[in-house]
Amino acid sequence: EVQLVQSGAELKKPGESLKISCRGSGYSFSNYWIGWVRQMPGKGLELVGIIYPGDSDTKSSPSFQGQVTISADKSISTAYLQWSSLKASDTAMYYCGRLTPPPYYFDYWGQGTLVTVSS
Amino acid sequence: EIVMTQSPATLTVSPGQRATLSCGASLNIGRHLAWYQQKPGQAPRLLIYGASTRATGIPARFSGSGSGTEFTLTISSLQSEDFAVYYCQQYNNWPGLTFGGGTKVEIK
Image (cartoon, chains in turn blue, brown):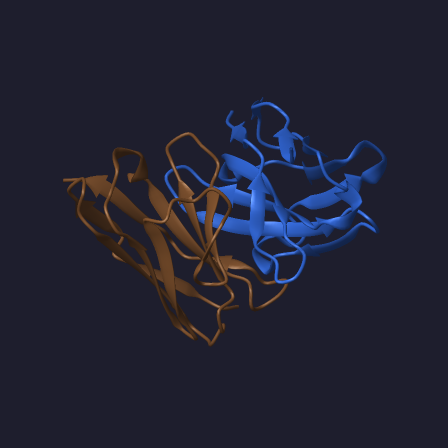
């Protein structure tokens, strides 16, 4: 059974750093793109960026370039989303999802990680 | 970036009635469109891909149609568990995957 399990909710202060994770199981983690999707409170879905764990090829959406870092460790089937200096506007639910081989839609999703940034 | 526009923002429907949701693309995306359902407190779930192919386990009351720039998701007879938010997503412009703003289907 394909599963994506994300790390738990986080409460952080502005300016702090954070790394959240998404561990895949039940499939060959290296061979599928993983995407990170942001959902701000009461809002829709936005693609943050994607990574191919096999070679760590990464692509960020223009709105998020330079704001976050996406990485992966294929040896432990885990992808990461990282901030070096959080802002209140980063408060959101973050989902990881597995992308199908081309043509690339999300067929499995993690349960989400709630990130709250507040002083 | 391909902009996806969904309408209406909110659809109020009685159980057992038909619901028709629309999704428009700013450029021709062929049939590279997926639909997702999201219930409160849950992750999205894939319903439809390729504009009209139901994902595994999705009931036949869900159907998708369209191509190019105009797409429709139809729920033929709404069940209580179908009240949720529905998103479309284009995947024609890799890696610039984009979602619509969502349509909330609520109980009348």
